[in-house]
Length: 419
Ligand code: SF4
Image 1 (tube, rainbow, N blue to C red):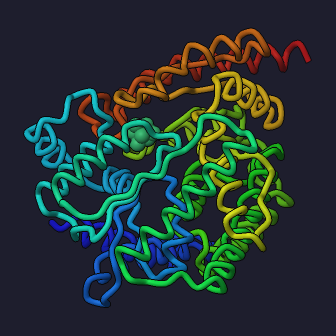
Image 2 (image 1 turned 30 degrees about the vertical axis):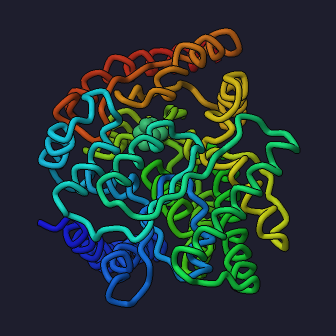
């Protein structure tokens, strides 16, 4: 089945059953927004709008302001894994020659391209921010589709010169988009899009602050939904409205304290989440173990000046979406992890070693050593392939975690006995 149609159907069905059974408007809104986003991807050609396939962390605000539809393909691959068996696409990518140890999200994207399962792009744009693999994988897509392609370079530092360099990259991106699509970027349109992105970002940050409460008022599943919208739709008014509702809901729950007894262990999830199966619900239900913070959600509390759109988009790129952890020296990542452990009163860390993610796996031993030296919080490395449950299944992940959870239970009982 057409993967976009499959996902749209699933999301619309979820919106409907959630509306009937569950009072939280922001959850319904998430499913509706995500379905609407994918419908826009499907209908871009019919509406005469250019369709750009973009890599993770591409500044999509610029595309929205220009009436170009930005389709974040790696994120779509992750959504699809949560809903269906993607083996045919992985097989197609292997047949094309992508090595087995390539990140499977990129293999999935290439597989869908080869099998003509997605609307073809008019443009391809990606960024060197955080993900190494994306540059090569977009080169393969460029070879396949032969369409205009732009790579945004990202500096390995946070200095004034690096800031100016990235600002110039954004200017070059805007010039590229105008020259390839003929669309003009109206300054007022960019300003209003960036203002909406700023509002959503402030709400996102407020939710992160609320997660410091004990018990944390936001589940990991919700945090992942927030991350998805923050990544795909910043700059759209509907996205800002969603976050306003999500903040209200989190504040209400923080006042309620309703889940205090159930939250026995506060976990920090390091790096990418497991999209398939029900691992997080199992951890919460069976062990009272809640992921209260994760590297995808964590960001510095800084924002550029939204009245200067380029300044805002540059600061955002430097401070959000695991950029600080993966585009700077390892010490930045280590210090951020220690900060998260302290600020969010973390009992244990779980680091997902996703096969194929070179930068994610390469950092594990150094982060683990820093945690051991600074605060001796238990640290588990969990091997997995996030887009291929045939490598390690949901059941096997639970079995692997069972012993770790028992150890956390014993730790907690000891602490309670010792006062
Ligand atoms: S898991 Fe790693 S390699 Fe794969 S898309 Fe994410 S950052 Fe890139």
